[in-house]
Image (cartoon, rainbow, N blue to C red; front, side, top):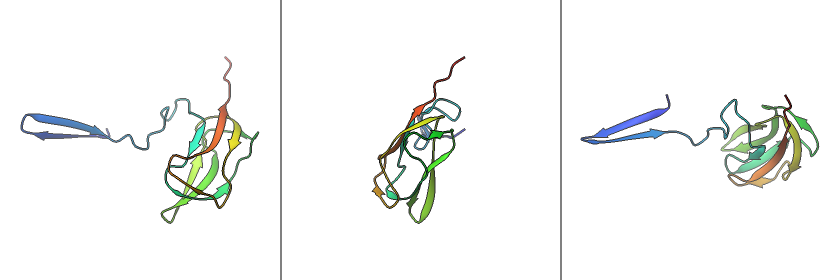
Length: 106
């Protein structure tokens, strides 16, 4: 279940990997903030301010460690700001794109 237990005599410890877990869980609401998961170069931006987006839609592609990483929307909504363009170098946790979540009416 993603946990590791260690025991040494009477001492016990439990560790759980949470480094790359989505903020609201897979089905929960997203933050609307698309941040760089690591240092790298933006090679593609597929969104502009005002664009409607769906959860899971690729908004940008980051190249890091000789691999391409698709950065996807974590909620349905409208793109509010895009602070990067193709060719930009970014740092880990740098805010790249913000999405205003869609208001759900019931």
